Image (cartoon, rainbow, N blue to C red; front, side):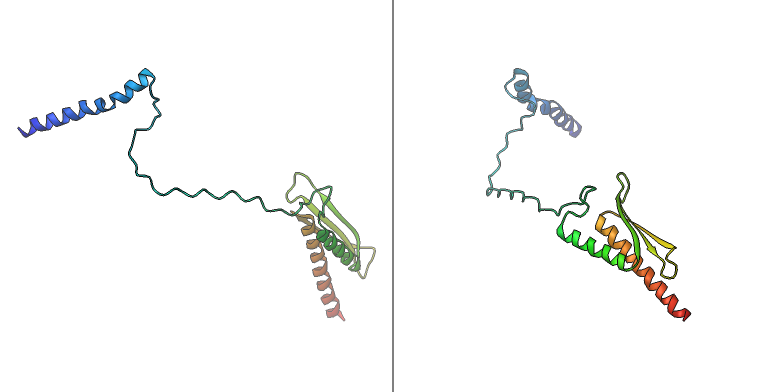
Length: 158
């Protein structure tokens, strides 16, 4: 007896489920509704959602260095000029800044400094940077560190 009840419940379920979808299927077939239409639901409306905040305008960015204008701001021009002046004081006879497209980092600062005891000989310094000012300041830093080292060596020989 219990197995008969189970079979009846299972049969009702197997046959009844497709019958529940029959009105929607008929609506799709007759063109009265679309297959994507959601099933009707009674949902209690809650409080209205606040509108999302409007996207803020992008923050102004500093001008980017380019090959045509490696120092786009007054500050970068001033700092570059001061660094190049300091390189001259430290004995730089050659200084170049190159933009190397397609290479990372793209800016190359190159400097040659006359050796204090032998002006015919030169020490070369070369630094790459993502930004031109970064490369200029890095090559200045290398030259200054080198001067500190040779001054210590010279003082130790005396």
